[in-house]
Length: 257
Image 1 (tube, rainbow, N blue to C red):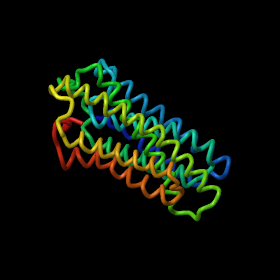
Image 2: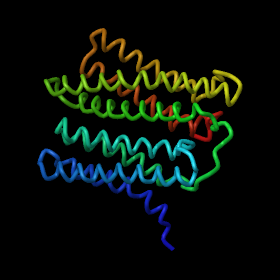
Image 3: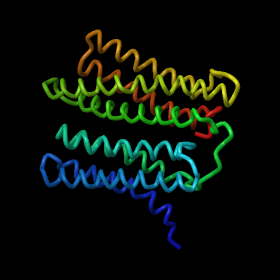
Image 4: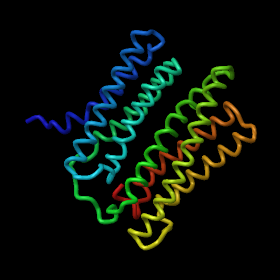
């Protein structure tokens, strides 16, 4: 018997790969149009899966790492569509599509069964906390991709433009990280009776905030292009460890994520 749920979960991965392949030739109008179509389909599939899971759960699907990653896929597909029209740089589309494919592959490897919400997650602060985290990680992922391109190119007008975009995305990402930390603390007091428990996820979320705050401080102070890009890449490495590394290597109060 065909497992339709599992089959549906493969769609974002397949469409991310198709977007990367078409994006590699997106300097040509036909390929760019094809990449846009596959990215739109990727967004619709990711959003559709979230809607189906939400109907099954009878609430917004925000209670697991799988759901969080599906939200990330959906938003990153939207960014891909936007960048296809604005930057006209195939390498950016390819790299961003690869990031989506990695996320989608991880989602595919997870248990897709819908489970009851953990008691600690039953808080009105959950939606704001998780969605602010998801949005911040999304914009920081795009900023990372732009910085990755910067460090592989000679400094020119193009890298100046990418550097400015990367900077503006961090300007958006840091306030979202702040909202994540504040609402997470309020939620923690509700769930565990303390605003701060020195849980590993909390600690590394704070480290993430500090790294990006340092990036903005140094960027305003004069760091540009490759100098700033390397620090931005470090910041994203901390994001990845905070989301994935902590969950696997340093489980704690957030182990259900």
